[in-house]
Length: 185
Image (cartoon, rainbow, N blue to C red; front, side, top):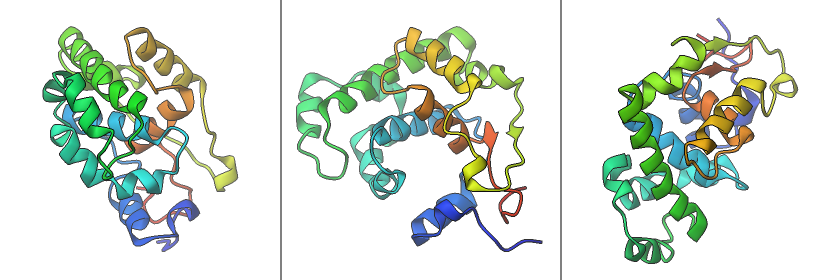
C-alpha cells in the first residue's frame, strides 16, 4: 500500500488531516453538505488553507452550520460579522451565506433533502477518477458547470463552476485522490 499523499496537502498538518479524513469521502448529511457550501463559497478568490484555518470561526458565526438558523440571520448579524476576524469579513460573502441557506432549505423541501438533490446528479454514487498527477486534475468539469448553473438558478451566490467542482471534491462526489495516494480508497 502506498504511503504517499496528494501533493497539495503536504504544507501543513491541518491540510494533511483534512486530506486524510475528509476530502474525497462521500457526504450525504445535509448539515455537513451545507457546511461545505459555506466554506467553499467563502473560499472564492482565497486559498483553501485560509478557510480551513477559519473553520471554527465559521461554525461559531453561522450557528454550527444549521441552515435553518442561518437563513434567519438579519442585517444586524451581517454588520456584526463584518467585524468578526474569525471569518473572512467580506460583506457580500456573508450575505451570500444567508441567501445560500435560504436556497438550500428550498431545495431540501422540494427534494426531501439537499442530499437527494445533490446526489441525483451521479445516481447517488461518487465518481472515482484515476489521475496520475496533480496537473491531470481539472479545475472544472461539465458536470460542475451544470450543477453550478442549476444552483445559481435556484438562488445560490458565490458558487460558480470552479467552486462547485471544489465542493464536489470536498464532499466526495468526485474522488480525485491520485492513484498513488494512501487515501484513495
